[in-house]
Image (tube, rainbow, N blue to C red; front, side):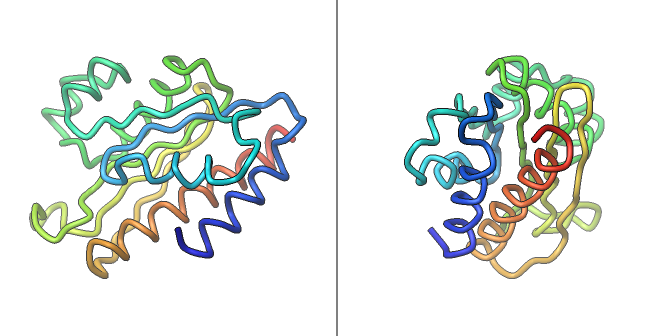
Length: 164
């Protein structure tokens, strides 16, 4: 785990411990890496309820209730899918807040419309989902590390401003 992820995980812990707030994750391209970063800090079980790794569309639909139509029309790498993943995670995991990631880390799979390095991050609550699109391609490992760190940062800032 990178130093950035370690610092963000500890800051998230310091912000959430003892507050009665719960969080969860829904991850596609990061394959559970955000959840791993969260639980790397001892005591995370107080606020982290779990995560869903939905690497394929079938799991996005079945476990996170992502619309089949949205997946067909917009692909899994879209803002609407990231939004639906957050709402689905909040509902499935029964958490106050969630973060979701869906994208193309590379090295292949990109198109002119959705190039490698495109990663959508959704974060918030089931009633207030926000998104951010990452677009830089710096190679698979860097794309994934950047996405995980940004996801934790966005979730932390959101919770700090709205709930704590």
